[in-house]
Amino acid sequence: AIDGTPPTVLHYYVLFGSQKYDLIGSTRNDLPWKITGIEVVFSEIITTASLASLTGVTKTGFSGLGTNTLTWTFKGLANGSFSTALVAGKIKDAVGNALAGPNTAETFRVVIDDVTGDGVVNQADVTAVEAVLGQTDNSQNIFADVLGDGTVDAADLTAVKKKAGNGN
Image (cartoon, rainbow, N blue to C red; front, side, top):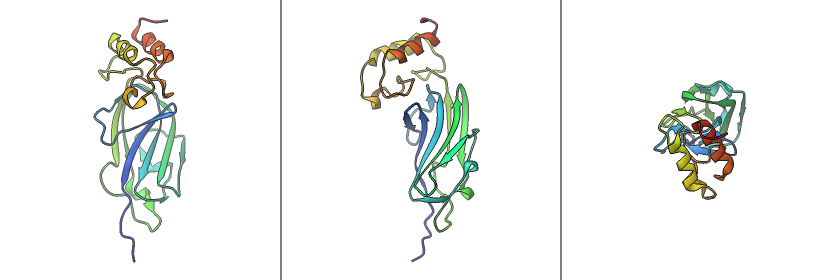
């Protein structure tokens, strides 16, 4: 049998703190975190790829070759808009099938501590963090977890208050 099936992208995560957020299927791409990497999960093991296989950001590291998950890291993306893309010809499976299919590019905007996603950090963001303070169900509170440690706590509230201009 000949494998003529190219790998496809299943998940396209942005990494922040110890957390990650899947841009595929998400309804929001305005993000409140300092993004430190992109992790892509493929439908099969990838044996050809490199630092240059992802465009749109300046990368400092690459890992995962020989698995179905590749990770590109960088110093951290602060405020701005970013258009990233996987280079199909530079990502291949074990028999040389090049990446194909949808979800090979993602655009997102970063406004650090903008919990509500409205483009500014203000009292609405403070209120949003206060509403979920101390809860640990990160799936419900992921945007309020601005520090990316898995829990919305006083440190997240302090960061947002400071940026909103009503904290120390």
